[in-house]
Length: 284
Image (tube, rainbow, N blue to C red; front, side):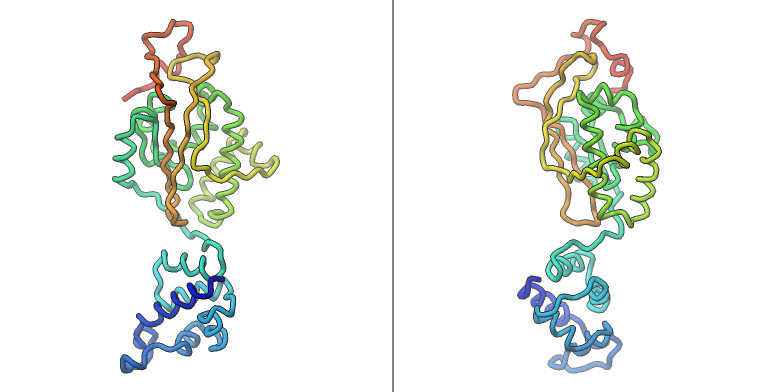
């Protein structure tokens, strides 16, 4: 427990409260909300609360949530209190699923394939390069615009990824790591139930419990649009950026071409080297 931080935070949050906010009679400014007032409102002993504020007592997670209510803390303040008091993140109760115009503008401006997803990998924005290299999510029904469903439910992914098996293993391992934080969030649990209906996902989910947290950058090989299965692929650096807020969960994913890369157009390829699924896809 970070003793100076916990005390500083709690004293500041206590000082901004008024007695009336706790249902107490008004007092003079000098006689503001006391430690005893907070302890009574949180239904803990004065010794316990004073010990927390002084950095000598480690609070239970239940008491931390109660203090968040008593002190009228925002979501960000609650997460900060958890980090300072017990050194761990507060379990998320939800995650952001709304469109972010700033992230969408960044995605559209990039020359590389790039998309934004929520915590359950629902695609919230994707650029033209994604439609060219991978799939046109914009042409899909909204419920199907999901990276997990695309990986395990779309046969073309086995052409897009040079090593599909490895990519699938890593994806499931990332889902497993995230489920530890979001397993109690109904929308995430519903999505996971849907994913377990895919045999290739379920086989990995019930196999060895591999865990993999999103790395900032990892290199993977992808076949250029149109090229056949014999093509060795292009090394793209998959860069993943996520916000710090555990109840946001959105991620920006960019696939960066190698320096000096120049893609081959479909018209330059012999017909026997073309992938039929690539040539019939939309490139909006």
